View (cartoon, rainbow, N blue to C red):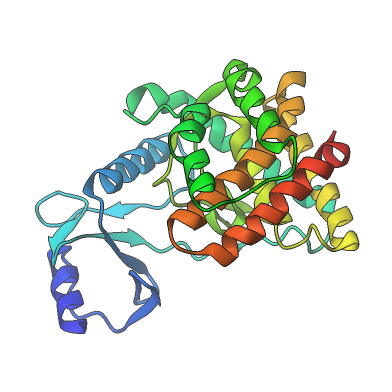
Length: 297
């Protein structure tokens, strides 16, 4: 395998690396300076590269892709598309350490800064314009039904009403779509944004709510951690709102979107053959339906 990796690196003009270390299933650290990654989807990779380069041109700190000798941002080898990126040495930001409200404000501002940049370039990139109501009808609800997943009374009715109504009136733009602290690398006071593979046009508050849910999933059953989470999330809303004011309708939509995100995860994990994780998502869906509005509104 290392011989193949060295050949791929040579196509990027990189010869005799000192070390190659596997860091993920399909990614390798090269000399603590570059990351080599294997991709299955050419179109998705090309979109991600193009989007990253547009953001770089706007001064946004994102990953920088290296072109191969043929001026393409990838090398096709062994049925995969290999890309080489400059390594970002930032760490995942832990909002539960230190001043919780301040941490939330910092995170909220980071999302708002990215949203401003994405808004400025969205007409330059061809990307999916997603309608969650359509996704609910075409694959999410059928997946739940096929696996005999039953949510508490009123959960699905409220989400159908939201997605077919108020959701369609909310401000939309190009968003990250996978906004969690693992994709916000922090170094010396700067956030670096990574992984734009799922970027799409959708309601802008999705990124905020998704970020909140990603921090809540491990903490909602612990009363102390739940209170800490609330302080962080209130900070996120404050920080975001200082740069991009949120409307009252957007704030009111957040509990519904929180519930929908967990329904989406439930269906995703069922579809990918992970029923135990799907069960956890179902439990959180029901909890959110009962509790989240009183916590964040």
